Image (cartoon, rainbow, N blue to C red; front, side, top):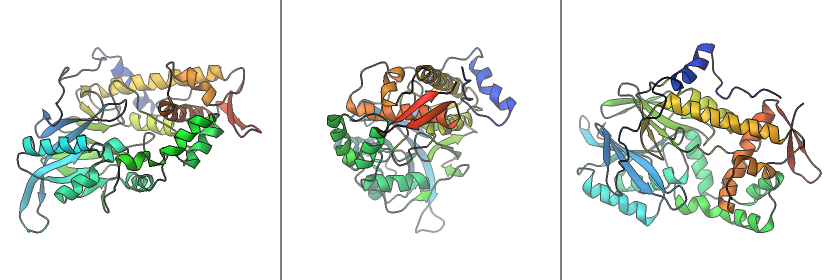
Length: 381
């Protein structure tokens, strides 16, 4: 049986052993310092001085998103020598009446009469980006995000997205999903992104990997992440051991990592695992502030869990393709044991192709396109 690729590629043997060693230490389990405590809609919970945890509803199966308010202080844009006190908002929620109402409640009850000075978005997905335009316009606050995420949001808001339309239908068909009634639903999803992100701010301030952003009394370093989205930015404050991880590191679910029609031969799972490895040095006590789930400690432990999860899925695919070549759609039951509706299948198929592309691009599988136009994968003997 071919060996699996390293699921956490590293620069040195020392780096390679550190995450696994910490995951096996006595404090291997994740720790949730706030227990079951959750902030109410329109309310906030302080997780560190000047760091407020917000929780907004979402109109789909993943029914909530965590947002963050960071106490901030910036030079006044038109009064030299004068400083403004206020907040930086990290992520926004989707644009719908319920989310706007929640932000208005925060304005009334939580912001202490202070303005939002800037809106920082970790990545372009609707639950993070949707209301950015409204917050930026309401407070005359600049948008901060990475260039790839900003440009991807512009494309998606114009209908040129990975969520539906003719290119996505053709991509799914090339991986064996061709049921006509399902494809009609996928075709109609061209408006999925603009329905939750109706407008993109016309300008932004660029976040770049390794850059340091001064927010209030803290310095935060931008940590780039790939695979889940084009150029996701997490924020790390080493002095206070805080990591706003966005969707890159979640405590109880695995982040969606998919191949899309715009980049059909991409290797997002490898990029995602490489990105996680760059966070595996964080001390156990670092508070990870995720976009979904509860704040936790034990970043390296969770990274090791995710590495094992994906290694197991890769092994299952290698075994499933040993006796005959199979397409991604045929392999969905190997990776997903529960029934999937059309919406769920769009994400599941992208994830299946991500795992298969990793094996194919690492030389552990062969990929051939049949006369019917479908890609099939087989384990190399």
